Amino acid sequence: MNAPAAEETHVIAELRGRVGCITLNRPKALNALSLGMIRDLTRALRAWKDDDAVLAVVIRGVGKEGPFGAFCAGGDIRFFHQAALAGDAALEDFFTEEYALNHLVQTYPKPYIALMDGIVMGGGMGISQGASLRIVTERSKLAMPETHIGLFPDVGGGYFLSRCAGRLGEYLALTGLVLGGREALTAGLADGFIDSGRLPGLWTSLEKTPFENGASVERWCASHLNTVAAPAPWPAKDVERIFGLPDVQQIIAALEATDSDWARHTAATLRQRSPLMLHVVLEQIRRARGMGLADDLRMERDMVHRCFHLRPGAASETVEGIRALAVDKDHAPKWNPARIEDVTPEQVAAFFESPWAADAHPLRSLG
Image (cartoon, rainbow, N blue to C red; front, side):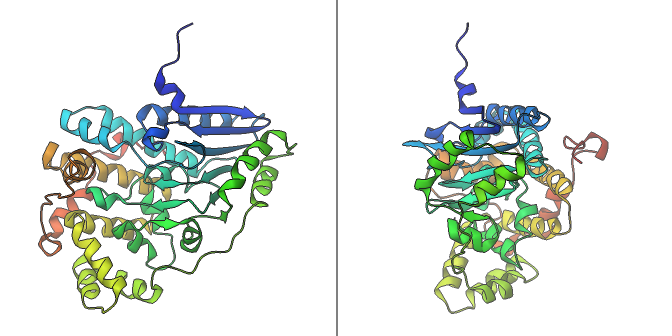
């Protein structure tokens, strides 16, 4: 028998008792998702969806020190960079299949429980925010940090961030703020908290407990959780006042006119991000607020195509952002336009024009 390819071991899907247990097993890359991992996850979830032996699904990540400690740091951005420069068609497949997986998670007919220990960012949020039970720990670090690399909060980020209270979604999307576990409860991006040291016991109990149905699996996991949120680490009134303003120019002006450490830090953060993508992201969140999940994912699929193809190759804001952060690591991206005040409405609107007719859209089959 041939040895399995290394790629196959990056997702371990096994039935423990009557619970489908998924382990993301690419610890050296903080379980960043490859196209092969997306396909393995999709295959397992589709197989278990109609299998009466499987009552519920639980997903975790493996850290460098062992089980847990890292959930998923997102998509494999070095692959994005290489594929974009090489014109590799696999880049298009990656986003089509990832967003279809996000839709599958969000609409899964059985309880889907995410153990969001450690880093949960970008694509990791995409496979956990749709969970029926989102569990965090004292080690959790949640974020949609895409503006840092000239991208936007995709994987359904428009859908779930726009449903945060008030204007919190705009604030989190534009800044990429990292939330601790209890802060994620405050933001509405997690459902319960458990000490990380208790996760191995909870995982082991899934196999040994005689569950009657999927709801009992979810109740069992929920019974181990604390739901006390932390005080918001952001000034809620200022977030509401400033991030509800009509455009990015007015948001940055209001921040720079506000005399507080929070406002100064937030303004400095936004000044480091891609000016163009800040405008695109604000438009994305506000459009998504009035959309269903499938329409949001189709919009994001249009947007991500534009990120890599409006200005191809090295001229792409996203390719430049990844270069500066993860390839050359000079942390000095050359954004175009260079200033928030120089972005035009026409530049922003181009991201929302679909390159596909409705009946040819790669995500046309999403319900």
